[in-house]
Image (tube, rainbow, N blue to C red; front, top):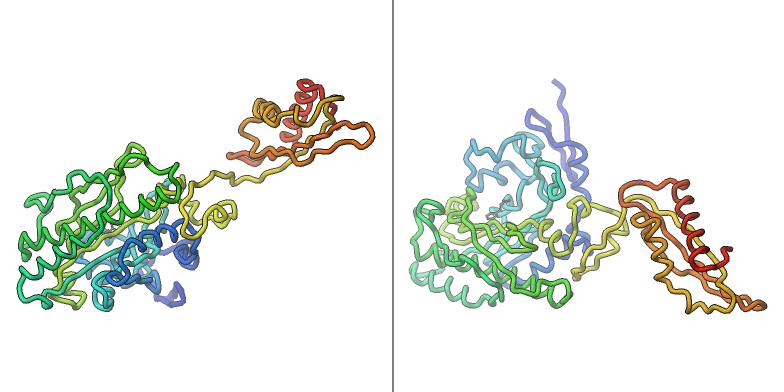
Length: 427
Ligand code: PHE
């Protein structure tokens, strides 16, 4: 049987029965949106990172998107028959290697190698998913985690005291927090069997206060950058019970935005076997994961997830490093312009002709098919003293490519309408 080789991100893999990655997905790996400093995803990533003290949290940039199936699933306590492993949900290079489905795949490596107590991992992740405005097979996550080593403390009471004092140092967020005292729950959201309730609560509090601090920090930056677009009311958040194979108890944090509760973070207290498999036994801690597209869509007002991949200057040119601004819609169809020049009536001055009167005529006759109208020229005839104006009308549809016959007809209507209404002489 002939052996098929795959090349992903500079490495060669031997294809087998599991292989299901398609060329169009493999091709996405080379774009690296998080390395484009003015891409909205990078801007959000940097903004979140800036809320974490750099001496406690190391920023880690994973070198490649392919990971072992062990890293993606086994090291995180996914059972061998867990449905998340299904070929129908993920892109496999072969039976041992997968395009990471979440940034959690790098937790083990980071717990083992990063010297600071915490770390932040951001990367592209890959899932075979439905197609709609908010789903795309490649998206971006940020992972965060924090650990304490039991061996650094003489007793569990000392460990708990340290976690609590670390929690008190976290800046307060200025949010309205609902249901924040929901701790573990025997039936719905159990703590880990080997962990005391006091330790579980101390870790949960550190986790929740940290994520609240991040959300508070994000919204206060937004208020500073753009006071008009920011929510005037206090931002509301709430904690919802959740389940992940590698954390217990687990929560999702939701924020209230535009009349809806929106899930922002998945999070929880890291399960002891995750530390064991990372070869740092005797540690305790927490982890969270965040979808960067979702937050960027909300903060920049970006309506469609595919736009993040745009190479169009009309998209990329709207953003700059360190800045959050509202996205302005543009059409993906070509534009075409037509100019209209005319002499004003004898004795009338250019000031007597108002832009808005011209705009109204354009609006009445071409409404949504015009993208822009500008006065581009104004001059006075040296002998006759008559004044001439020239407007440029840029035609463009949000839905289709306009044909020139259609544009010419619209332009003709506007011309005769202007002549009739204002008694000007067309040139
Ligand atoms: N990896 C999880 C996901 O993609 C999110 C998560 C990360 C949950 C860390 C808990 C802790 O849904």
